[in-house]
Amino acid sequence: MSTSLLGPAEIRALAERAGVRPTKTLGQNFVLDAGTVRKIVRQADVGPGERVVEVGPGLGSLTLGLLEADADVVAVEIDPVLARLLPGTVAEHVPGLTAAQADDVDGSPVVVLRDADGRDRLTVVLRDALEVRELPGKPPVALVANLPYNVSVPVLLTFLERFDSLERALVMVQAEVADRLAAPPGSRTYGVPSAKAAWYTHARRTATVGRSVFWPVPNVDSALVRLDRREPPSTTAAREEVFAVVDAAFAQRRKMLRPALASLAGSADAAQAALVAAGVDPQARGERLDIEAFARIAEHLASPAG
Ligand code: SAM
Image 1 (cartoon, rainbow, N blue to C red):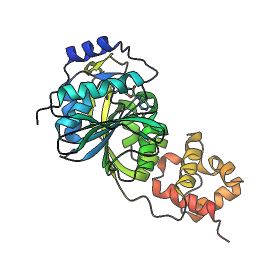
Image 2 (image 1 turned 90 degrees about the horizontal axis):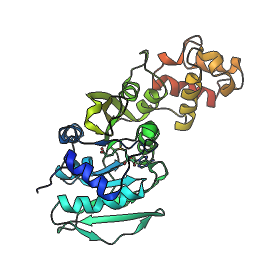
Image 3 (image 1 turned 90 degrees about the vertical axis):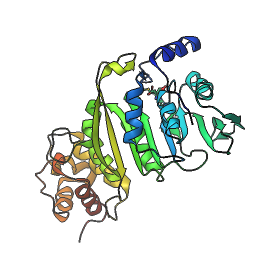
Image 4 (image 1 turned 30 degrees about the vertical axis):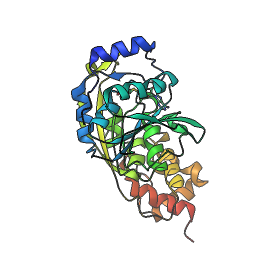
């Protein structure tokens, strides 16, 4: 297998030929550096024959890195110009692939490149990742992506929720978002993304990535986060109920839990009762609670004792 990665000159030439002008609204900062691509793939522990979903393949830097590791990639891209460009770029860099029949899945156009053994090496879905409810082919075991900045947390949480085949994720996000995702309770950056990511996974920040590896160069540094699937907390409350408690607890960060949860509970007294029943100090703040504690509160809000 002899996949070659994209170099900086090739990426710029590719973009120029196709008339691609990176837009900020879609978080289009493309990785120019093969070393960064290989680091992402290595940290994702991607193995031969594994099916990986990539959100936002862009010009294909990371896609080729994943294919080099012999993974099969399903790539979800919102930008039609980039989605149409990708199969050609991949076919040039990975020998022996041919276009298979393209079907629609869930209303989205899909293009497949297959190898001589009948493996779907690349599947491109043209769609907003937030709207993807099903993916074509075998279920993916990993999400590996350089996520668009403006929707990185919603995309990550949505995919963990919708695709329970995902055992792990390795994502590149804004450094500050990486800190939030990996923050433990009680730390300065602990908040809604930390608590919600902890429902699905154990998250840890694994590397910092300087802004100079991107084109165009963004205003912020990035970081890699590795997330490994865990069992969600054992609770009778529904995931949505637990997340509603998390949202209310952090809506006004400085508020104590009793007033913060009053409107969700129906009254401050009802909030107090649920907190006490859950073994949580009503005068504490949300930033101190782990996801298990939020789940206990949701349980007692859903079915108040006595
Ligand atoms: N993976 C490429 C790389 O590393 O060079 C590009 C990463 S770039 C940060 C983000 C990519 O996500 C862009 O290709 C952009 O068009 C795409 N994108 C933005 N919003 C999206 C969405 N809601 N759904 C799917 N793709 C999206």
